Length: 210
Length: 109
Ligand SMILES: [Zn+2]
Image (tube, rainbow over all chains, first blue to last red; front, side, top):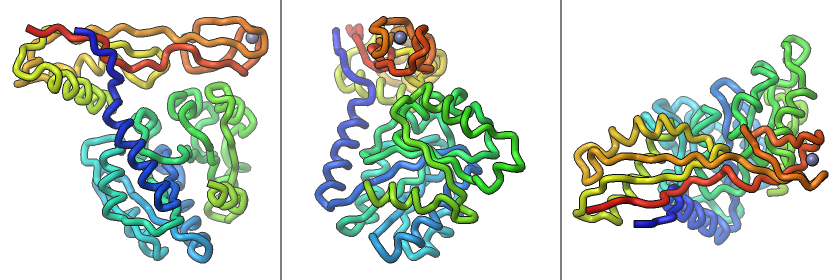
């Protein structure tokens, strides 16, 4: 019996529904992915604080077990829905759909989806997001894009965080950019420090443009 | 281990087509440029099919090699990994094959 059926067809159909659901509210979702320790939650905290005056924002926080990050983000005043994946190493479109229903974001919102911290599994799953963002930091290896090529190939934007630590670590920014472009020539990259705020404007402008 | 949920998707799809019929074999096409490890899928398949109409079924995985075309020199070439680089030095290439993830067929009865 011949099928010729895409394995992820069900996930992709739900993702398309999510995208249409968001469009109806004039909202966008940004899927943030990283290894643990990239500073993604700090970046999100600063972003939510900065957006508070200009645009409604909300967060879907994917975590294997704890709700520590969600509590940190709630302090910014933005609505946060926590999704515990348990043993699951990634979010999928169905998890995001139920989180969106619960979150009920305001018209014109930007919904940040903080994916589970790992650079392999989330690459496979369309959530219905507008853009996929990979956050890495200069304390990670220069060759990260070559070690996790699938993630970098799937990304629309790479944020290189912890720029303030660049003088103290062995990280070749130019080479890292070259590696990232070798798996994804269309990639946009930007550098910032979520701690000092350097480069944050460029990131906020990018978010505003979505 | 996203292979577990991907394998679960395969088994769900096959079960919904098979109904009460026994499934003996499932054939997949997995592109070399997807983040899927075939041996992990084989491992997950036995776990996920236990107690279903697929229990004991064989899983065949055909790996489709990566293939790309260079926009600079016009040449098509094999892509062993996701690094998009033509022999001419250009990284301006388009991927032609290697990103497939499909259930090709199943044997029931
Ligand atoms: Zn060429």
